[in-house]
Amino acid sequence: MNENWIKQQLDEAKAQGLVRAARVYPEAGGIIKIDGKEVLNFSSNDYLDLGRHPHVVDCAREALDRYGIGSTASRLVTGTLPIHDELEARIAKEKGYEAALIFGSGYMTNAGTIPILAGRDDLIFADKLVHASMIDACRLSAAKLVRWAHNDFQALEKRLVQYGSSKVRKLIITESVFSMDGDIAPLKEIAALAETHDAMLMIDEAHSTGTFGPNGAGLIRELGLENAVTVSMGTMSKAMAGYGGYVACSSNLRKLLVNSSRAFIYTTAPPPAIIGGALGALDVLEASPRLGNILQANTDYFRSLLHEGGLDTLQSQSQIVPIVIGDNEKALAISRKLREMGIIAAAIRPPTVPAGSARLRLSVTLAHHVDHLERAAKEIIKAVTA
Ligand SMILES: Cc1ncc(COP(=O)(O)O)c(C=O)c1O
View: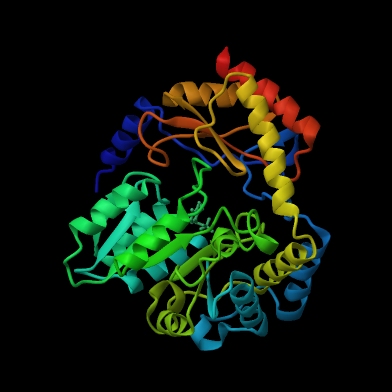
């Protein structure tokens, strides 16, 4: 078949400043070397700088040495190793739930869980800004998707009242820390609404795991909402520095997922080194429970520097600090300029963020010390206000 349509689509994206490419970086982490020069990476999700932590690396290596590179099969065949079991038990305990289930990635966790909670004829109420993996999961579920204005629990209440009389299953989904805005959902109010309206509640804690709560267990735990939140979702791919995702939930829901979640059943079990690394990251979180507090205090300081320079950081209250530029090309130009100055601040454009809100999505990590934060803030202020 003629492939002109491919070029046409790419040309259209280019005209809108929306072409993307996977640039190769010579190293991973918050501070990296490029062509021998120190570069500050403000686009890494390794918030606690655990990617090269000796204990995390040792645990990953130990699992690799013991079990080899792969798990050899899917979880329900011969892919479940003792470390999968151990990690699920540890996650359940840390998160304050009866059980937990690991998936191959955070994306797969949402894709594998949401369609089990709600199906055709059911209702899913989603915050306007939830992550693409949740939206794709809603589409997979074939449930009716009802959106409510970002972090506006009164808008959610109106929606729940509007659909209140229906007898179908209802599921509310949101994030605790939002991936592109760094703001925090009104979890207590949302949990109360879920209870009043007899809806299930699933919270994506991808960006609050490791960074908030006791031992980095997240905001559900910090607020004591374990009983009110049906599914606490999280990932091992951000503050835990590795890869993979999980849900913490009741034993019965875990059993149902094991028996019916396609993203759990029809895929190879996560590889041993990744699971070993995640166990190592949990050890570090347990031994150093204040890492998240230090990260948030450092980010408060970074935000205050940006504010002093006249920049707006929306409602950010976490290690994720957005600076909205608006125009796609302008955001790209600022990102390029910062790169020349030794700062990586990726320009995030639609459809990852709403049209007209292209931005620098800055993430502070524990690799960044005070002098790094001050240097970065100075250059960012200069580049954005020029
Ligand atoms: C809120 C949120 N949920 C889920 C995911 C998916 O996680 P993963 O990268 O582990 O697939 C991400 C990461 O991009 C995210 O930001």
